[in-house]
Image (cartoon, rainbow, N blue to C red):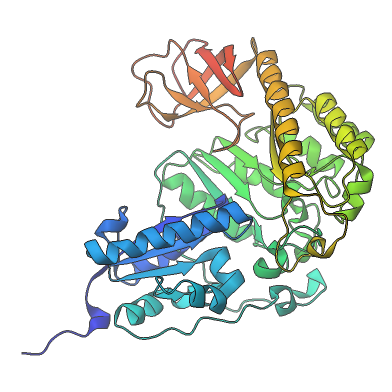
Length: 469
């Protein structure tokens, strides 16, 4: 009797995704490849022959979470059916062989270049073959410096398969990968590479596929969405694509994430605010407000220009949602710089602001800067700004009482249906609960409602009558 080859035996795999929405898309593309090659996708890592952890390598807390998740998955090899635990994603790409040496509990560390052959990689690892982890390199050197030279015609374009791992009515859609900016605090371009836009035909094809899978909101993600199209010869391509994506049958809402203030154009501000089906939502990466600190960050701007941008946004869409992130305690940040930031936050009236304390990142310019603040001072400044932001965002939510909103329902398991209004991005911007909603309401419904109360950044709204869309 001849036994079957290990490469042909059925094998189950669980994908555990950490980090941002871009990682979620990567995981679904990996899932598509694996499913097409005969793997069975399972939701629970304890039920999988192989656990693939899509790691995040952005900041220290995310790195620790990734390592802890890999160690927890490795424990399953002692108590469950799991035969191999594999690290992929940004932490794996960024540290490669160093991560493999420091974390022997993981059976392999795979880089981005392993993704096209993910199925064969996993089968060989489970079969006991040793995988040589890559030596990390600056991925910006892999493409021409000039964006226009990065795209070569593909004789036979091949769409990357994707398999949804979540069933909700929102899904991320990747606009581009990589980043050309050289912010002194950020290591992402080194391991994600230079900026490369996806072709419009691929975006539209994937949008139609997602709509066919029940998706009603497309969340456009990239490292810098304002750069979309520059390597395709059209810096205003996003303004063209937004109406086309919003017109896809079945798609009711398109949302753009991560807009770079220094690159945003008046035409893009207007397109987001006025295009039917596009959420008037502005995810603006300010990072600070002091012109001095911003220059040390290798960024541009000041309170006047940022407030001018926000005035432009609200002139087109007075009820637009606005969020941002700021870094506190950057090397050389003075008390006056901190006061400038706080004054800006008061004047900006944003819906959500993420506050992060500065920490050195390997391979970044800022890691070599003098005038570092000590950890206690950074923590104190983060606590101060976070307290201010909590007060300001609660006030902004209170100002929303009486506004008409359209809520995309995402959860009906609790006492009240919960979803998001157009002003709220997924995961980090708060939610809207529907008070007095009909019992027939379902996940994926769009409900016209009026805000009646707030709780922190979260809103409570009452349906305005009529059937959900």
